[in-house]
Image 1: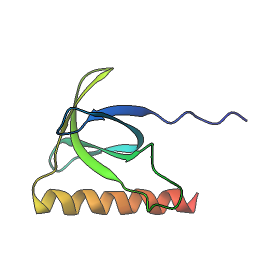
Image 2: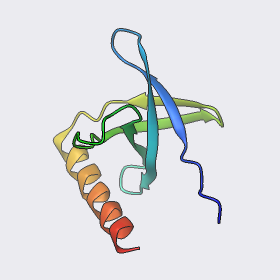
Image 3: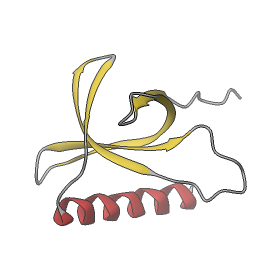
Image 4: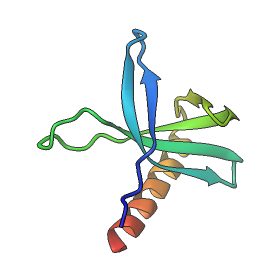
Length: 93
C-alpha cells in the first residue's frame, strides 16, 4: 500500500526567508464563507512539541494561495475548535 504524499507549501517570513511547511488540513467555515489552512514546519526535531500554524486563505488558482493572518478572537476560537475536532477525528481513525 502506497503512502499518500503530504502536500507542502513554502511560506516566506517577515524577513523574506522561505520556510517549508506541511499541510495538515484545510477547511471551510460556512458562517463567514472563509477558507482556512493548518500547517506545521517540516524542519523540526522529533523532541520538539509540534507547532501548528493556521491562516485564512484565498485560492487564486491551483498553484497560488494568498495567506492572511487570523486577527480576531472570535475567528481564532472558531479555528481552534475546528482544529480540535479534526485532530480528534484523526486520532479516532
